[in-house]
Image 1 (cartoon, helix red, strand yellow):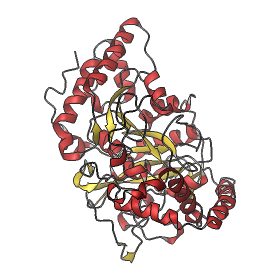
Image 2: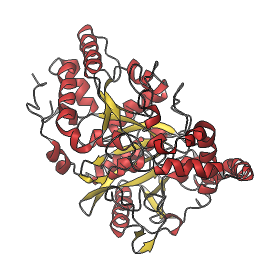
Image 3: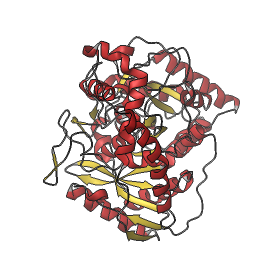
Image 4: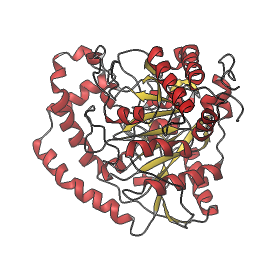
Length: 463
């Protein structure tokens, strides 16, 4: 079996260890709980941990292995973003308004993971109602980045990303309405994936960014995300034989400024794809106009679902209050125009894949920045506070296509990622290319693993 903490093992090695009897799901679950207790006071990834429920799930998994009846994710420690309902636990949605709301049921995502044998380590921190690309709210401290806790983990699935990057969970489930999986995954050196819109439903779940959002996995590696995606989507994604692809490469989408180190890392990823046997061609991606669609439809959602919360503005973060105020000012004709433009935009991006099999861009414009200090400039050029640091993920939420981020290198001592995009309903292709690119780039996680490898008796579960 691999060396080191089982919380850092691949999912395949973990379930093989469980199945062989040399590794105990209960002891691994306890290891996760101990790790959270030991280090999460510095990172603030989790908002709720129910040790009793976690260990009960692990005990069931252990018995299933004894009985020879394991399920696909049996015993695997997985954290749950606090935007998904988990029965018996609070679902805060990152808001004071919901801090005491106990969920009576699992939403669809949690129900699928539970039925697959996952062991839930806890609920992870999120931006209020998912409305920020950083993970800060009024419930408690901001979520820090495990590579440097003074910097952001990104958002809104920042707690999910931090839980994996610090070795507190093997996997995490997040949601991505405008980059909320890919941005924190890139900032934390992880693989993160947004499937095709509608591929992974969340029945009975939280509503926000409903035209654009999708649940998805965050993991150390694409191979680990594959079995989780299979559970969420209810279909099999086997790794398929290699075929050469035409890759459209755009290092500065829409001509936006990008940190030179990220451009260099993206150039290196393009070269790596070439070494893998793909044909890489520069392309000026026609993705402008996304915010004319995204902005009005997100504001329409917020006005419908949460407009009443402006009656207590002191209970809201500044960004959610400003969002709801903007929603009140929204011109209905802008909503109508956005509705008309949405299918047109999706067709425009779909047409790109008549010429290219895969698109490659940076995931973000900058590495992780200090908490509460969004950059005002990028590469010496002024940028807007809302999207300047991370403008490259949301166009593909509007397009509805699958997109992933792969850890591509280090810039200023922090990890950065590259974004891969494929046509709708080609998650298997996206996973395959992501996995081969990871293998070629061989991104090192040694530094962050060493930083948080503090749990006593980290090999306690190995017999």
